[in-house]
Image (cartoon, rainbow, N blue to C red; front, side, top):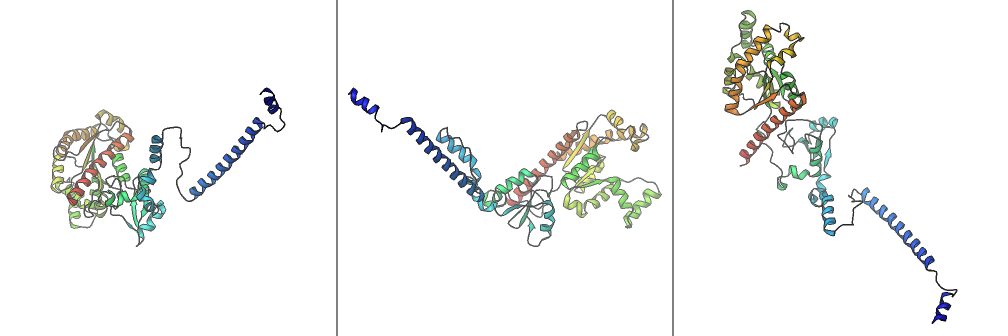
Length: 371
């Protein structure tokens, strides 16, 4: 046996194990490179076709976990499969394109109107995130809502897939806000911010009075005679009549309203309620009177800062608690806001309160209508 082993060991045709292993490694390397190139071209082909490809998927874990992970990554293709075709019919509209589609006879606003199909109670109205879907224009409130709508359009438009019913068309749910507080508490800033974000009409009783007494109507002439000639002040009934006329205008009926520093007395609040003028949100801008004095210093509107401002603060402190009590007891609509906080805090708190109120009103209207 020893001679035979020596013979085989020294035989010239004996295969070289190391050389064979290197040759096989080269073959395997070439095969792997070819497979990777083929797979890369295969993946690119599907990407060009718009097919979602899951890359860098870890497989050194259990099969069950891999399956769960794949389901999560392919949720839009598996769980939301019914929207694959519907997504192709939804397209994002640029801001400059929206007016063209709105004026078209083919494309119309959806049954939600200017409200978002996802959160139709959202007070923020914008056309920056509009979507065109099945010849209808949907106005989303922000970019996240727009992405959600583009992902599952049927979910938010088709009742068969769980979409929320639209608010009845004959029911207009718009902001109705009153902002009250001491002088220099930020009432004007908050009112204009709410008007800018929600599209509501900003109202000020002084401007309403001034605009009305300049008209040629008989009632306007009577008021002008009493105020400008005889120097008499307005009665509460006259103020409410002017406010009713202003709120009946087209812009207020379509967009809602936000009024600054009105009502100022309980009598005015009661008359507003009798005329069915009810602010759904009454914001009380709370602030210490000393802060009002500090903010008013150097302001042209308060040249006689001592007596005039003191009298105004005393009048507000005497009447405002009764107004707050009236609206809170009967309508639970008063929201107190610390006027000394930052402007962003005040705005966010006010918008959250308005959104909560609009949501409750729209849900009640929809349930009452459909049930």
